[in-house]
Image (tube, rainbow, N blue to C red; front, side, top):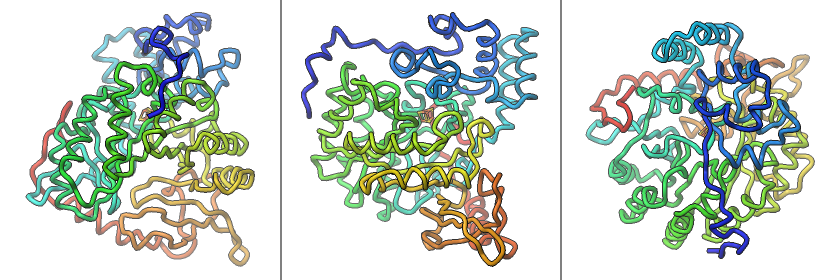
Length: 464
Ligand code: SF4
């Protein structure tokens, strides 16, 4: 592991301080904003998740560029993130001073209208053990990869206002799907030799301290699973709190754990979320990246294309170039999911593809490991390849990068051209009544729903 640069002595290390709805008015830069703007943040922050921290505020946001600054929009609630009627509903609840319980009720009512679980993630991807036990806290959608949600990793160092995992952060306990016991994970992997990859996700698993996280990882290592090739960690800690790998009390221990994984011949892939080049610009993140890479871990990067944050090709080209220069591997450009503030952040599919194509044309081959734009939808990850002419008509060309049925992958299919479509559900097949996979998908979902089984209760809530 790379030795920590002397300039990052413990005495200069910042201490993490988070800001939420309860204390955001203490932030000196927020105090300077007009009371109306502060109230707007309060209204929206009562519905969508809101948390930021001192690193984001002091090193990532350019306060001279408010409200347009991308990281400000990424982490601070903006009025337009709620639709006007939802905004009015919460505004009126706050103005009438209805009390915490009533305000919570209003908030939950609005949240339920924001498609809190897109892509059927609660109903359809919950795996079973052979004895029929349903494992809430895990998801198994694609053959090779299992997602695991450690119960103590269901929060983040700051929240992204576009996040599709937002119900987990706003106290809707019945929607938390975390599993305490990693034994279930091991048992499941033993029963499913086709699974080669485990993705630790959340929230952000890097919110956990190294000792806690190592309990999960070490139980996998100790189990000596012949099928386990790769452990992935989905995290935004490099963007929101790089000190996790620099000066936090457990930073060395965490990196030693990474080295332990790679030392066992298991590939460790750190799936880093970067939404804008500014997140790659500080000394802290650059050194944190070097330290993670020195453990033998590979860092791959991903982000959705987001209106107001990164909806132009120059930003993406710059981001990919900076990533490759730092030794990272660009992996995915996603399309914003059909949940939460999609109307605010969403970029139509045709435009997203143009941004991708233009950015791709501006970078060298080493950046072209990236795939996208891709929708993580109920049937699978669907990539928009472009627009083409079929006779006198225009069509949108797509393909599966991942599918519930692996046979769907890499088969191009067409939709009627629709400039405004923002998600697969908005598109119509170019010919025929349905897309080629729809009949089979319906049957698959139906059969999953019919499977019964005992539910394993999870930390912080039960099955939905
Ligand atoms: S870091 Fe990831 S899980 Fe956390 S709020 Fe952002 S997108 Fe959501």
